[in-house]
Image (cartoon, rainbow, N blue to C red; front, side, top):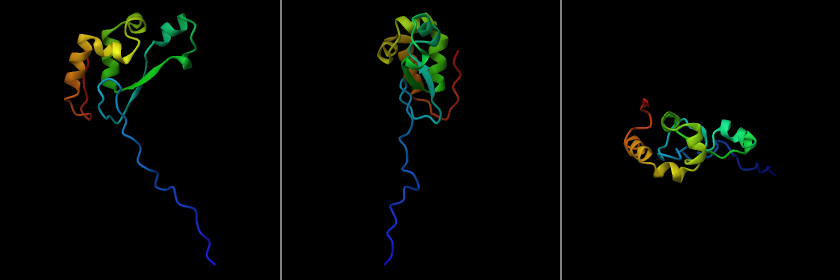
Amino acid sequence: MARRLPPSNWPPPPSEPARCALCERETPVLTEHHLIPKSQGRRRGVPIHELPTVPLCPACHKFLHKTFTNAELAGEYASIDALLDNADVQRFVSWLRKQPASKSVRVR
């Protein structure tokens, strides 16, 4: 009598495409953005591994750090909703959503 082999798990099932938490584009690379910057979290006595993070595409991540100081990010903009309420962020995100994810975006 032939043995029955267990069902194969190869190839692995396709994973969900990675999406930026701010612009919601599917991008090949995501970076981890600390909603409360590490420098501000250390001042508050919070261990770095306990700080809240969100995945962002490199363009959104660069834009946030060029636009806001760490103190502003820790105080006023410590959530995705608070970031999306800002007019500059809304304008950038609406423009960025029209760009292909493969396009390299320069942030000034």
